Amino acid sequence: MTPAPAITVAGSASIDGARLFAPLTLTLEAAQWTCLLGGSGVGKSTVLRLIAGLETGAEFSGAITASDDAPVLKRVAYMAQDDLLLPWATVAQNVGLGARLRGEQVDRARLDDLLRRVRLTAHAAKRPAELSGGQRQRVALARTLMEDKPVVLLDEPFSALDARTRADMQELAAELLAGRTVLLVTHDPAEAARLGHSIQVMTAAGLTPVAPPTAQIPRAVDDAATLECQAALLRMLREGVQ
Amino acid sequence: MTRWLPAVAATLFALAIWQAVVSLTDLPRFILPGPVLVAETWWQSRWLIAEHTAVTALEVLIGLACGAVLGVATALQLASSRIARVLVQPMLVFTQALPVFALAPILTLWLGYGLWSKVAMAVLIIYFPITAAFFDGLMRTPVGYLDLARTMQASPRAVLWHIRVPAALPQLASGLRLAAVYAPIGAVIGEWVGASKGLGYLMLLANGRAKTDLMFAAMLTLGVLSVLLHLAMRRATRRMAGER
Image (tube, rainbow over all chains, first blue to last red; front, side, top):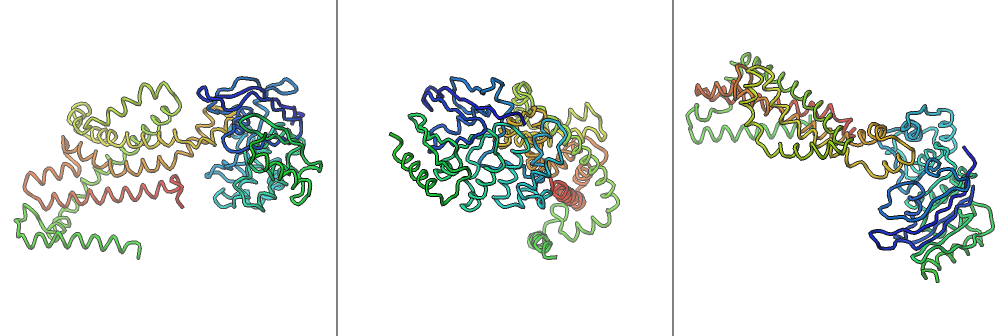
């Protein structure tokens, strides 16, 4: 993996002439987790999809740049709320999907190592339908890591999981994605408070930075400063940020 | 055993109604023969019927194979090229508005009295359901898969083979299952227009000679052939349809 760059999104977006989000500047610091927190429909997923080079349905005017001036597009890995596992392929085949799609040889040693790290070695030959929701999302995480990209874009990947599985997944992701530039889009204040090196609250008015707790990520769920931050974030979301 | 019980019961019920109608109305046997008579005729003419069944079955199987290959190829072409969609799709839909069996006489003229005019008729009838079903599946790939493939820098070709085609196989399976029922109808229409062999020819011949019992025996044989074909296709496409 090449050294993780910082990524800056600067610009505004509109849908059929209607403003989706006002001019904003979002910087994802190199090798850090940036949490973009907001309610539904404020355009936080649009920001992520713009960085990923995906169809957004919105018109974006502005620029997406990397701190090393190299193109961003080929250096991102993407993980969504839906695990997007191919139901006809085995766990191992799903994890190696990227290489297969590019016509490259799948690196078996790396694949086995990743399956071990997400504790799915015993399930390598199973189909996704035989796994639980948490296991499926671990496969998706392994697939994301298999891509070995310096920038990782997470679009609410844990929001469909039950509370306990979600907390486990947050810790696993924080551990495995260390050293990469991560954007986590979420509507969950607790998640942002646990995982953000930097936290941005997004509303129709734009971005508001929030000072994260000082503890290392993943922060403990019962850490006082983290809970306080979570409460402050929730208050901001409810009041729509002044 | 319990799986077959409903089918056996339904068959016996249908035969009972048939026999009841014949007994109550006392129709002459050339108008409506009873099931017992038809069964007798079937047994007496079993070698004749078998010979003609073999011809029709061969037409149907070749027709199915050709129709499947053509349909799959068309759907793949349509799915991978916008130009092909613009040029071919309206035509494809328009041909469905035409009564294709009206083409049967001209197919006989073009391809002769033999096997191939019947194969062509079967292909014409099943081509559209297979193409439409598979094409529809190819165009409905869950958008999340396509997003993921895009971030992985997959070429359109790789996306087609590794994602869109496998995701569309259940739809292709339903198209093939439909085709297995339609194909015998196509072959028989071809035989009606001009043939010297086949169940369609035998039915026409029996009708013309007022051998209604033989006509019924041939028709029921065709029905059994279609059902068997459908069951075989169901089995063959089980994995494709994602059933266990």
